[in-house]
Image (cartoon, rainbow, N blue to C red; front, side, top):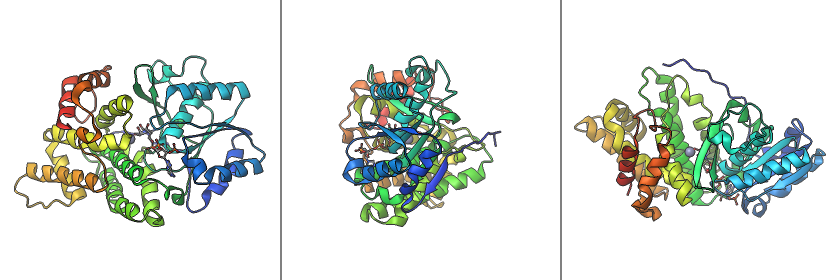
Length: 387
Ligand code: NZQ
Ligand code: ZN
């Protein structure tokens, strides 16, 4: 087990009706709030009115910036920074999923920095200060409600990049599973894959003696595998929605990193897809994860055998370790298919035209991933396996 430092100070406020606490919580951090959200869902399902009333009841002055797109864009982040600076805004409230939250994180960091906010994403500066941020989560997926990262797409060149630091974690995350009843099945499925991917990026490590975090990771995976079909069959199944929602946070709040080296190659390879083709992140991962696994499993077959047996219940009596591993990957693909996720690029109508370009972008700062260090050629091969 590696040495580690774990700090996560996001306050999780979880359960039925908890969104009514948003005004009181926001008032702990500021008097002038930027309310930041996505497209139509917030107003369509009535949450917008509740939040406005709640903030006004606490005497909070509200400035609004909606229109965050899935795969959020840098231009809107810059607009948000300007609104905050012009109006001396002291707090940001993001309502939505990873996209609204990530956009809000970038705005918060940009307000406290005199240069171009993209500098953070290019690694030219590290973040040391930000506006405080609160979240009302409406889709469990990205885990951004308690994560230390933000991912933004720069329309100039379609670069999708991230940066992070403990300082940008939200101060609080209000999480009512009932708010996720209105999610389209596609978003429920994509969210489930993203949650699983956040666990798998950590699970596939070469570090030994990480039994506790292995078992915790397997528990999150099994919880998502069990509850996602229930939520798809009965969108108003509170208990299934609640299990998925807390899984989203645990998968990505760094608890499961303790003592291990994470991988992150599949995310790097996927971010090129969603950066260029604007595919839903979770759907992109459902395509990339099986291909990545098929490409790397031989480098540490024992870990993949453990995954197949413990997570996918593959029988130990299968004739050889390789057969056990391949059966495990097959069952994962079948699960993705059963929740209506694509597992091949062709299903997302993506051809080989940009494989070289995407692989070059993914490796512009060196090899990708830690479980196996992937070169540009490796990544092209993984895209080919996913065709
Ligand atoms: O825009 P609206 O109209 O709100 O619709 C959204 C959007 O179309 C809809 N939606 C959200 N809540 C809803 C709802 N529809 C009905 N009812 C509700 N309750 O769902 C769609 C997707 O929303 P989005 O915020 O894009 O989803 P998600 O949470 O999956 O976020 C994806 C983004 O997060 C990044 C991804 O790359 C992607 O850009 N990630 C962020 C991470 C982080 N900061 O730690 C880690 C992840 O690995 C990921 O990369
Ligand atoms: Zn993800």
